[in-house]
Image 1 (cartoon, rainbow over the protein chains, first blue to last red):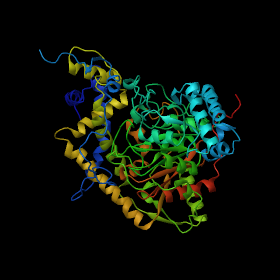
Image 2: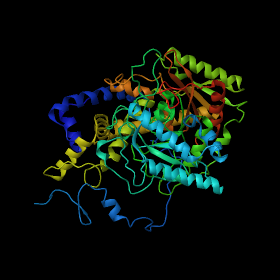
Image 3: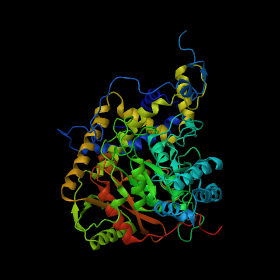
Length: 95
Length: 495
């Protein structure tokens, strides 16, 4: 499989990474070089093989559904580039 | 020379009051002031008063007889571990000003054992790379030079290249690293030090900036195998804040070093004799096999038939997880923000400006392999191949106790080499990636120099949670090799 420019543009949009038109071609070429190489996976027979989703050394744990952390709103907000009172700010999204 | 000690030697010196933690810390700060401008191993060096205050507290604990495992030992922290109130960048422009309000579990454990933090070491941006050339804060240069080529700057390996350069050059007694596909072991091999990637789950990932969560694992980078055991003891242990953290007890790892390896079975994976493997790497591997035989090990050939698909499945799985993990850098909640007229435009502009080229292409690749229509062909397929790779190792470990391989397919290369072809760069990880996929522990031990005067490492792989046998075999290799070479640039060399 290989990418065309429109597909690269689409995945850049999905990934929310702005790509200049000038970068589109070089990016597509680089991704296609890598894809051409990983296509060798097609030759492996995986019939009946389950996917490995983690490293499966530990079972998932459960715990009481209680708050164990928090009360650090101001510390977390202090990491933001722009805030207004106890809120993050974004450009207007509703007309 | 205080900057040339192992952790074990330094701890003995501190306990005997031969020197103070303050003197030890000061010697390292002086070495950093002298050599860091050339090596760029540290992104952030902590202020002298902060470092010396930590050292003074350690001296007080030695005087009171309450010293911890790492007390008074000056170390570097890879700038991927969040450190409370100390800037943590992941070597990315997008986090250039990020100061975490919390401490990662691993660094908190090291502090609890009395370690003295010198600063935050350089890395490839978000730990994605094998050369430490993609840092937004400039490349780290290896302290090693090829014989007769004093002006050719070499890479320290990556992604934990700042840590490996700092430890090799005497700018820290040891350092933390993280390894997703070889990022502890390969730079350790390139810089002639010891690097241990523990079993997945040994060290908590909480507070470590995530790259590929099913692969990321923290570990020690040190000057001796015993030091790696000692430091892992301080770093490891259950953490309820990491859902993949192991609840197994933490053994006294350093005691595994020096144990007899007589009668252990060592497997040599035939598939790792890759075509085109350089003569010097092959010769060092043969030498390692001979040393282990002399130490009483039984050496047998084993087969890991899916080895050649390790790298390709890694370069689907890791970018997929990266694209998901790095979605959080949106310019809103933390990190750099580029203003634009709409919310989507803020995301796109902030991420375009904040991420470097390699990070952007891995996010795009990951987004593609997870996207509708391609998920089964790429991501699901790679996860199934990952099962096969894990089974290869499990079958091999039914017959052998450890595996011995080269750590990397070559010695360190020059800055700028391997930059144009992404696949060529990815091949540096060919021997380290399979163990990451399987989640098993791997140790790189420096064993000798090649004809150009550069260090080569051998890798010992073991069963899940059997770091102790890995450390025992690593200790035997270390004893046989007697590697005592120092890089061209180091704190003890003439100015």
